Image 1 (spheres, rainbow, N blue to C red):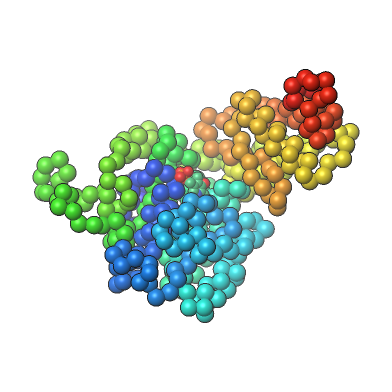
Image 2 (cartoon, helix red, strand yellow; image 1 turned 60 degrees about the vertical axis):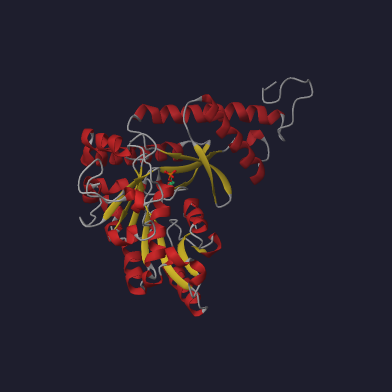
Length: 384
Ligand SMILES: *Cc1c(COP(=O)(O)O)cnc(C)c1O
């Protein structure tokens, strides 16, 4: 935890906990935010019903759904997670955020927390954390950063400035099992004030006495920092990973992947059959295949259907584990290079395979534009 705190620029006195992943790390951070919003009310004991106004939290439209789920689980309600519009680079719009907070206050509600995302799941966009830290300090709001995969950028000398400000957050969630290459499950949450971290999870129990000696000398129990009591030894694999690689090397691997993403971006841009739909500053690329004109008229719906079939082809081929998202409503193949074993030749191979599968499917589609099975009864999906 000390290694991670230091690498994230976190104060030594802050506390941290390894979790199953980013989802639980977000839950813990937002729980600390909720109970820290009005410590004197002891929400842990009294519950939200006793709170005088509806608690509201804020994040961009591109926030991960684990934050919706945290709002539900913590009794805030996902309807009270305000999703603020994003700019053309998919970052939260600060003016819209400020207006939303003001409107909620005017309506008697209680804004308490802003969630900044460092590396959105759809495009790898990075919210302006420094400006959000200023805003939260001015408004008396808790700043939680969801840096599930993007926080690893802090390890890089070259790119670290992209995530400047994460060290100013009240809590920071990230995954070791994404861009830090530790086997799943391994997430982490850091909280600036240890007291805030423990507030939601502390409940006295006679069977959890802290002794000076014995098998758990000195305390505190890790259960005071999160929802789990019995825990697996996650720290071992994380410690090994950090010992073997070290944060400097992890930073260089981040730089390597970002360079590979730019290279692949150029290959996609340069290919007549591929259309780049979005790219963030990191390693996420969204694109789709565009059949040539000879393949007939292609409306939006047919292109979406085609590309979703192509994605399944690609996954089933075993060539690459690409996922999907939507960009301005359009179905997109979504690719994120976070593998330390990816080599330059893999990028060209990937483009060849996607285009090859696309051509095959487009050939089939020419015969059955609606995806209808052929009349001769041969199995649907095989070209005649
Ligand atoms: C992956 C991810 C999560 C969830 O993390 P898990 O480890 O899957 O629980 C949360 N937020 C973002 C931005 C992510 O990319």
